[in-house]
Image 1: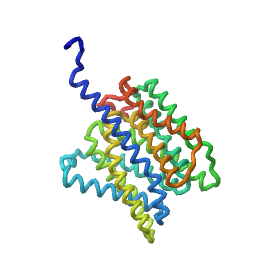
Image 2: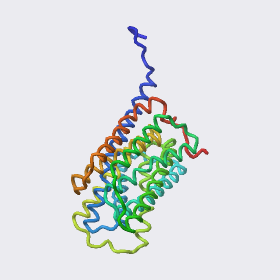
Image 3: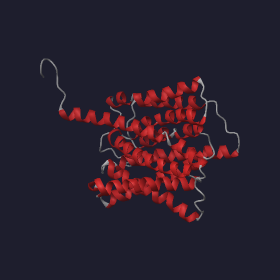
Image 4: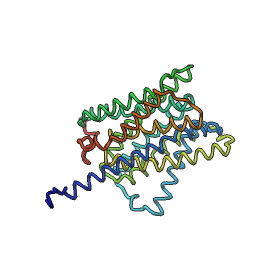
Amino acid sequence: MKNGILKRPAAVNAAAEGRQAGVYSGLFASFLLGWAPILGKYAYQGGVTPLTLAALRTLVAALFLWMVYLIWQRRFLRVSWAALLSCLLVGAINGLGSLFYYSALERLDVSRASLLSALYPMWVVIFLSAAGQPITRLTLLRLGGSLVGAVLVTAPRGAADLSSYFGVMLMVASAALNGWYLVMGQWVLADIPARSGALYIITGMAITVGIPRLVSGAPLGPLTSLGVTAIVALGLTTAVSRLAMFFSLERLGGIQTAILMLTELAVSLAFAFFLFGERMTLAQWLGAILLLGGGMLARVDIEQGAAPPPSFNPMDM
């Protein structure tokens, strides 16, 4: 104690700073991920099919990361065989989810697609609570507020045809897989650095979505410059956002990262408004504020003990 002020231990300060960095990293990842449906729609306008988009954007992301790591980050290439297999499995789950996501995006507008994809925090809470992780009241309150916001930002919306209903089912399936992917990612990052995990998980994604694209044997088709630009931009944002998201997962855990990532919905809706002319009502803007507010309050929730210890393993059931 000095001058009547009790100093916090250095370890406590370091942990608090690490969690704060995790919040900022999660928000940055959300901003980048908010571009996914926008760039996806541009790719479709450029003649790209959903399967081709899912495969090529992940291939671009994987190649970009491998180039960066081989030149500047070689120390993160070394992982155990068990960790490698775990990363590839997590990547396969996310890759399957991305196939559902981009197939659904072709059938839905950006607003409705963003709403349905934002349901994954519910699955994260379900999976982690089933695994025994304690859930704070503030976590549940913020999750509930975020989901109310998700409903408001896309209401009133209704599926107009069977294709839209099929798109809804695909997006709900994608949200469930994304939730399980976050849970598995938290488990994997308990054993390896976030940067190593990001590289091999994205590699697993690329393999998973690349196989059905190769098996389909369909030609790439005449891709316009718009389609190619959208694929490259989506691949680069995928790579950087995954690095930021895994950094957040490593420090905050699955639930807090999932709630932070809900802010991507507000980002997508804002860009849909300005770029595609999708109009939002006052209630929808209120919902976007609820989502953003839930993300900004993550630090308060963390300080009340919502973040799990680094050794927490959601697979230990």
